[in-house]
Length: 182
Image (spheres, rainbow, N blue to C red):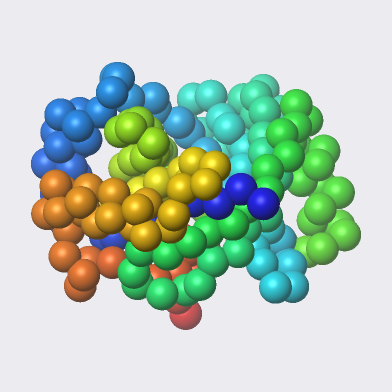
């Protein structure tokens, strides 16, 4: 199963994070409008990521494609392994309807993601609707690469961004949204 080493942190200064990412990145960033719909799933998380054009909510005219993603990781505020499977779909709204009727929806996360690539690391600077700004690092493990090496890469990048351990986030955005609504 594919895996990455990842960490998420709250951002105090989005502009500074964007400048750091631009300085470190291999190329210009990609701006992604994403809607993640989470479904009931035992032992893992299951989400349908709908890639949107424009800034509005997903509808038939702007839901270009999607990805069904199942992933497992510990809820801990440190650099950790995440194992995942991804299935791409050209028809995310119909797939979402099937999943909702079959499994039930837990909730939805809407975000604008600025994606930078720094070597083997995907640097996400996310604006999450209802939550604010976050940095997420995903060091994609190469075949045969030791997790410890990828963790060192992630920790070095956290230092570049000036992120301290008290800014680390242990849980997924969906959990933060659920906590905020209580």
